[in-house]
Image (cartoon, helix red, strand yellow):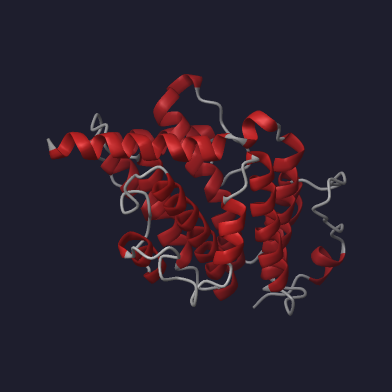
Length: 280
């Protein structure tokens, strides 16, 4: 395992309190990422791939009018090349994660089938890929986020009397419990220590406050689970996740704060309508 004494000793403190951040994700990629060992760089790539996922979906939906999120693993041109390669039935480009190529191939094979929620398909592939990271801390982070997202979407599905099974991604024990349990707590109270906190957050009617509480919950997970990591890749992973959260809130307003919840509900409604039509 590599150690990064100089890089980590020179990092600024990051607080989730609205104070101005003196470091950016782009700076991290330009100044710190090049110094990582190949194995550690692959761990950090999992962070950047989330941005590539968003860009892939944007390009598929809007083409030349797509608004690309900067600072992923790939440029817009490289992503477009991936898309063209999959569309033409060519072999995957060298170094491209398999889940991305499989997603694109499936997208073009089933293009036009409106019942498929492609965000969920890509998310499931991404979390499966990330959860296989050989670094236990980083794999745990992605498992935690998948569980949080699954539990929230399951709660929303129940609230709006929609199919929970169609909304949950992944095949782990928690996902299976969410799909099959009729209990109020989905039978997860004993195995998910943060379930009660999620239930409280979910009950809030202030959507922007919900988002902040969720990011605060993620922040605490990062801190509590990296206590004994000092000059390792785990500490750098925590740092880039934290500055990403702070950057997001620096750009967030009330309208964009509602997008995640509204989008989730709209997708659930679409899934429910499709399910009904298939039963006729």
